[in-house]
Length: 476
Ligand code: SF4
Image (cartoon, rainbow, N blue to C red; front, side, top):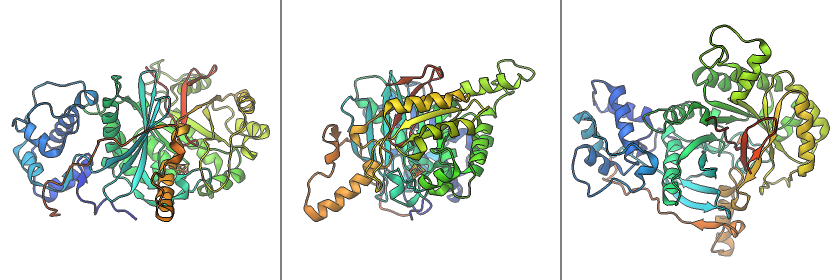
């Protein structure tokens, strides 16, 4: 099991780790919050160059040109005079080996044949590999990030679920996926930047709560990624206490519940971790998140409560809480199941996204129902007052489902040992495959330490993979 505490160097984007190190090394800042805010703001504006280069720039030394050619794609606020940072902070960062700007590197990037989706295999410094996915749609880009190496939840339809859990990512490692994604976008011809983040890659984000929370806070920080709250979506298979914590700590971000079945018995068959978590408690928790901001600053009526129905309509339109339902051929997608799902959510006006199953090579041979059947299913669920839509899948030609690329990569490595196969990514023959030039910087010193526009729902919804993937609606 990997341990973030023992890793060295640590990601500089892991702010809690930097704060701890400063304290441990006796670096006293007069106004630590403000100084670190400025430090991270400057790092973002500089496009995340290697640390020595960045510190030299902060000290006003010449670096021979712009810090990085990608900088403008990450931040548009270039050219302003750099504010002063405390000498003690710069001295520490100049001489320490404890931190690097990027501790991970992009091992492989595959772009789908239509250019809409790029899947990244990101190698962490301990050799583990996680996946991130960039999805381009209508000039906007969504990145799907991983929060863990593998996953303990073991969902039967998920490639990641076959890996077991190997550990969690630090907040810095989560944020580095945004840095890699931004640098890859900068290599393209379009001037696009990341607008949405979804935690629907490898892992159960709410099993890595503190690091996911810290990463979310950085994503919505106006000094750095500056994403609107409703453009960050945390997806869970249902860790109820942490769902409630998220509603308390960050009620503005989106919460997506991967429900996938309408009864407890059916759910336990495909989501083994569901044992002991009643369906009703999950629906209650997602409903509480949806309603959390009603009668607060988001209420268009200002003072006074709306009537209950209008409150729900208002909250539902915000789409801050959603139910994800993977469409697998079998008992969970029968028309009877559609009635059961509709009844389960009746009266709440919840948003339900049906996600066509994207075939993976997991042990059970699963498939997706026909489009016609999914339309009927959707129509039945909608009769019970939920806002139900079917999502388009993306990236099926690049091992699109969650964990699929890494699982295939592992298999390929095993096959190579046995059969001396040169290229293990046969399944991606139809896609463009690039080994991108985003490398981890050398150590500085010796180690000292289709859009589916739903008629009822007006939402633009996308999907990639087996259901553990989502984008939030562009709320602009
Ligand atoms: S679907 Fe999500 S929660 Fe389930 S095993 Fe895969 S990564 Fe884990």
